[in-house]
Image 1 (cartoon, rainbow, N blue to C red):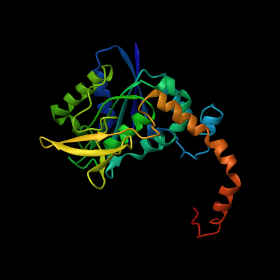
Image 2 (cartoon, rainbow, N blue to C red):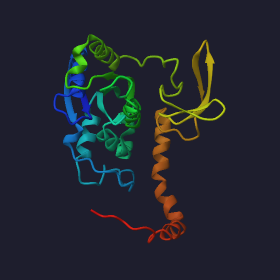
Image 3 (cartoon, one colour):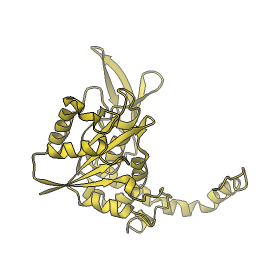
Length: 278
């Protein structure tokens, strides 16, 4: 029996994020057990960037609930991620968990290929901002295989199911979870499938999911993107993930090599400005 983990980035009990995850689960045909995490129930401290999770390879050293969450993610056969829109972005619980993702890199081989779907919920049609990007970012950076992600609309708890269209979306996500990844949509990044872009000068664009740069042309009034891999990739292949992990670990020796020079630069700013403390 499959073990599916629903990651809910909403503090609302029985809110739209929670019931959407459960509706997706109801439509999965394979026998499975649904386990649920409400991120606001857990103490997730900000990452301090100490790199000890990589250097010691014993999980995060911070005394909070992250390692418990990491264990659940590692144990799951698949993930369903849901987040509400707060001020044009995914609820901050999801970003705080994403920021702790360095501690998952020692488990890259186990995480790679773990199927996942994501859904964002916004109260006003068209006002989801970068919510979808935040969900895609989370799924990609925990090294899961994003099968499909989308946005639905509904403000009041339960409002998302006042129409059947959102129930159909739940069925689509349920069907996609254990199926081969669909072909990338025409108006998406050809490398990662991202759908959010920054427009630069001279028809140059940057994918905001994988951060690679390329160009855009119109073909039959449809945007077509030609985006090339950069020299340092984060999640496009397992091999590149492992290389990025090696690069991260190498930061310790690099720091020690330049320690005195870096300390001199930093100390020049020590007494500048006045700190406000709680």
